[in-house]
Length: 335
Image (cartoon, rainbow, N blue to C red; front, side, top):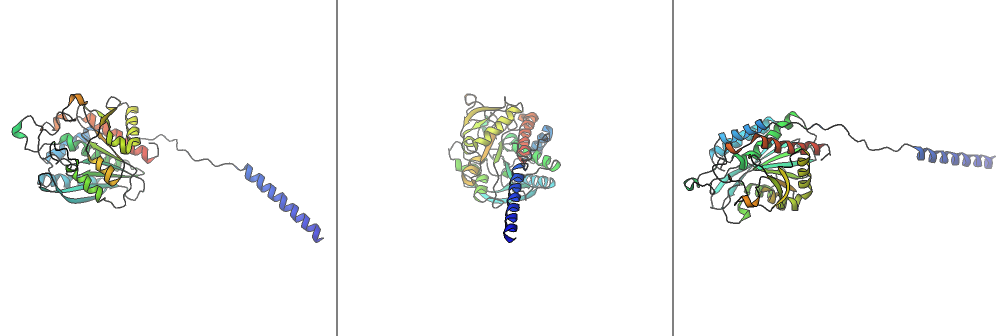
């Protein structure tokens, strides 16, 4: 009887094992859930950005260490805080090529600071202390207004801060405004004399343990004659990001502005973020064809013509809309 029962038990175990194998093989295979919900990209208001440029100019020139510079800084900090950002001020002393020490401040505005996945957006907010390219030699020692060179990029990022406040995003976005970018020695060929704020931040990163997926720098993005080519520094350190941003811009209908021409290397804040902080960052910067400019930039560059009259609300809106599309697509893994 024990032997018989043992055979019966073994048979039952075998049947059960076979049944389990069959059940496992016939079990439905789970597939990843694909979110096919159309992604809504918030609209950007070009007039709002234009007004942000005007507001910066209303304080006067933003030369580091001046009362007008501080007044503008306090307004920007308050503005980002009103949008719900966690704002930090990174004070530092910038020693420029003349030996003068300028009291300077990098502004860091964090949206969704607890989110691990992050993207960095930047511009410089100071304005140049001299106008060495101005045709009027009597005015070359005077500071420029900096509507495009500084003011335009900051204005676009203020608008993006407003958009995030009204359209919550499921990702961390850090807007970092660098100071003391535009106080380098004219024609000296010394890159380290420029972009002092981004150099300082890259060596003293705030917040600590910061690890964004990539960064986008905006510089001179507001003129009426925009031409955004692919600079060599962005291509070298963040070429994949650069290609994706330009492809997106072209798909959005702005291929006449965002062109695939290689515009060569240049010294800008992204160079130091790439080489010191090791964060891949691209630059969106207006550069005319080389045969149409002596400086590599627009005719208003480092002159008193860099005022509100050369600013286009349409150009500001286009750049703002593209960057907004990038971050909202990135938040849903669709970029």
